[in-house]
Length: 92
Image 1: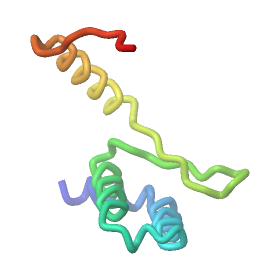
Image 2: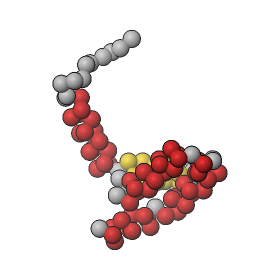
Image 3: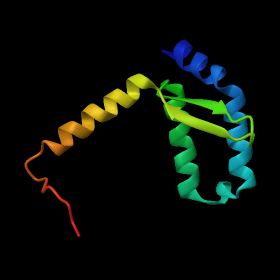
């Protein structure tokens, strides 16, 4: 498990460094909520649920869900909507 986690982080290392720099420059480091989001992102990277791409135009990191995790989330969403306590919309 440790080797796989470490490998996932090393594969995204440059993008993680960009994200830390952007987080610092934007002032997010002063916000506990923003720090929580960044740590959550790092956890998803370690679990290989998210990967990043560096945008050539802006130089910013764009994060995307892995196809497997996206499928898992869609299945979870379907299960939630099957619940008895859900009242269908539309709401106006």
